[in-house]
Image (cartoon, rainbow, N blue to C red; front, side, top):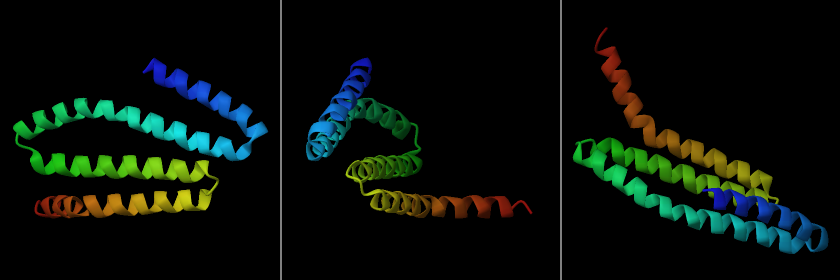
Length: 123
């Protein structure tokens, strides 16, 4: 974890220097650093898989599926939005975030309906 933080700070400092000399290379470098860090996160997925297996064995597969969908949407939207912002397309970045929020609402809406139906049955 410390290596990743050191790498990201060193890369940011280096990109600041490159931005002064060749701005077009700085954007490309920023995208490359973002992808390297994102790919390094794949190693963390092994831990996630072990936790998912434990939850699945406990019999909560429906909620595990929803949790994985929500996590996947959040990760994809965050990376896409950051890459768009890095390229200078902040309006596209905000649109990606808006799409992600709408997608999350659509994923959890059936469970909100179940919750409301359950609560209303008490009254």
